[in-house]
Image 1: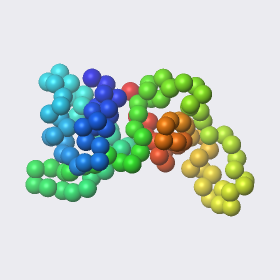
Image 2: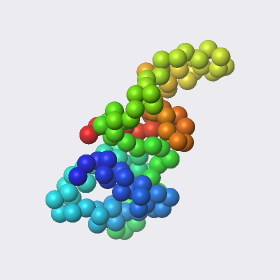
Image 3: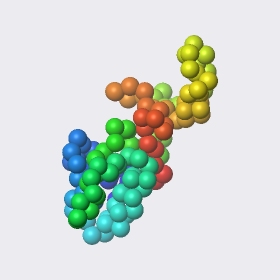
Length: 126
């Protein structure tokens, strides 16, 4: 089971809803459980899952408002849709303040617009 499968399951089953670690793990088979636990931890560390409440039986999470994909899924996107930000934007008044947030970051265009690594997109290692 890949991280991308866990990401897809979260997006399909829990988008817009809160959930616990346990609820997510019920979707994994016995052989997948260890991989999913590690992938879940990485999603939390990457900011793709946000803790919203602490309860006696565990933390309640929700999906962050970011595109979350694995590096292999990013690389599988057509080259016309992915790139690295290299354009200087001196036409923006605060460009010198925000330049480091954009320059050298991976980008991906999809139906909802342009996603920028670290701002609106999280890319996880496989």
